Length: 136
Image (cartoon, rainbow, N blue to C red; front, side, top):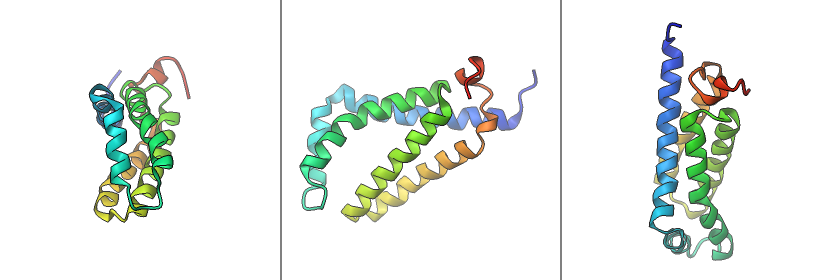
């Protein structure tokens, strides 16, 4: 079969976002989630997001990022993974808006654009485990 440029571009964008998310989570897991959690709690001190809210979120975030990254990298459950990633970005952006970290919100919006592009073009997800196993 001839490789369609749209399908190749989709694979490369999906895989790049997957590597980004996987390594984001994996490095925090490797270095110790407790250190990441402490950093997050300190980072949100003085905001409406108390340590009681930040701590559980920070405890699961690295595992969620690693899992979503792995799913995106392999193209398994792609639509579900992209939707979950999009929802995660909404949560992260909401927290950053509460913190009034507008610069980082702008950077996070770039991720939102990538999620949008991948969901919008899901029909080009040819090179994936979804396609191999005929998962929609």
